[in-house]
Image (cartoon, rainbow, N blue to C red):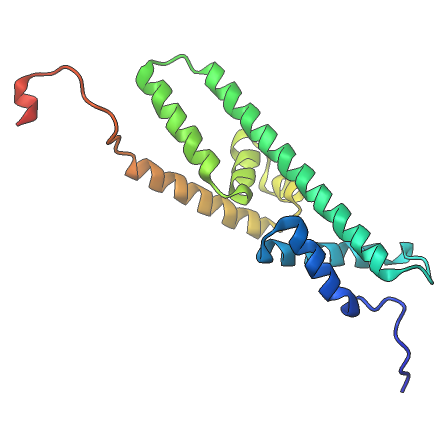
Length: 178
């Protein structure tokens, strides 16, 4: 049996990768996701690892670049969603009630988790096919459909629960109060 360590001993670097990921994202679950994404990227790019190079340094670099790419992707998605909201706001010339309603709907949309918001934006606003949207998000079509379903369910729940308790009815007759 050969006791020599493999030059690509990723398992021995997990602790350091997890610590670094946690310092980048400050959330244990997100840190685990980041490490997993980085390890998948490192595995895909394994041929670029130079024999004799420092594996820890290379893996930390892959982890860091994965994190930066994720931040850029999230910022880009958020920017697209905000631009779409501004465009839809400019296209609508309804009354005050419609403006309030649109604001509430926009708030509900932005309160969706980022994954659901991105999926809904690509399919409902950009009118992408499920396959194209899944490709953009780099997820399976089934995962996209699940995210869309959850997003739509949350928006339906918002629609059902939207009783404007903070608005006061102005006008009417005394019979309205009792």
